Length: 66
Image 1 (tube, rainbow, N blue to C red):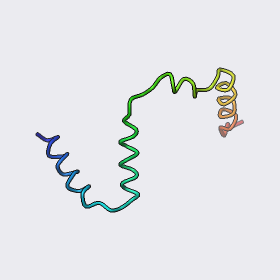
Image 2 (image 1 turned 90 degrees about the horizontal axis):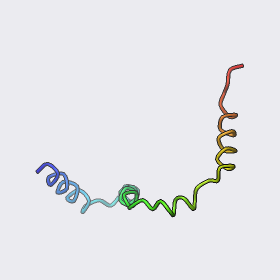
Image 3 (image 1 turned 45 degrees about the vertical axis):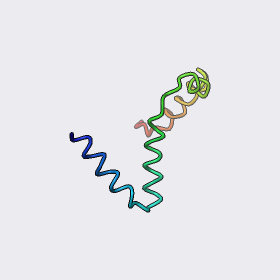
């Protein structure tokens, strides 16, 4: 029952909402919950060499005490 009340409360708030920034944030949350496509993400991933170069760059950027 608690979930239904929360949904009703949000719907009531949303119908009067006019702040575009808040609406964009809510849309981003909604879009974030789409199903994960492993094959698509794999195609956009780094190669082993790219990953190693990126990690070395980040490690070397740390403020190491010498």
